[in-house]
Image (tube, rainbow, N blue to C red):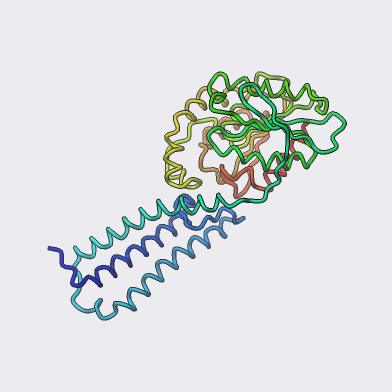
Length: 353
């Protein structure tokens, strides 16, 4: 039979176990870089050590603070005949379960609040144009006169398509003409999606500001898969860059929490449309057909949403045909926002177009 001695002592143990479990979860999130469980999003920090310090600090603060509070406020009751093992096990179990539930709810809310804060970015104005069944935004540097190189940017389907705005603005400031594709739901379907890149190249080649012999294409996430597939059949594309392309099916594991909060990780893992489109594009098979044209493959060193092992095996067989670059401390979702990635992309296109 359960006997909690007093309501105050039972609630004290419950609150103590709850806060301690919260602290343990934050330490685990810091140790294994599971930002989907973290209250403190340390991905803005440059080094792994800096990210861990904040996560561990919050976890230790919760554990130590709850322990100090409990032992100070219940000093007399603790050393009197108190709860037995069954009562303690129940309270600690309930407290740990509540801590896990709160973490799974609060961490996504905090991430949503952080992402809703407007950030300053190098956005660029442009004119809207029709590209096959989709729309696009054509951005031309101010004062452009002589024929210039132009690059088509394809965002990740189902991912945050606005991440291309920062990259587009940066490229325009560096003197490159950019066409950013904005696909709609209808243009996501296969094989209709294969018409996007040829239509974009045709549009760019007819612009008087564009040199039709210096056209490039860049895709992010599944957009990278599409760019690889399209470039394998279109010799009009002279340089190809794929940022964190999916290429192979991503296994469902706790690694998803390294970049996504729990609800988004569930949706990502269960997104059958993404999996189906990835399989239909089959970019890994077509990547070898881009050579001898320049081909850049760029990943974040901490990308947790792409299965790297099969890709690395493929790269080992085609290392002469692909220019692989890895951005330190970058993941899958924040890769395009990293200054080092922006600089690498722009300089690579300047060298190869």
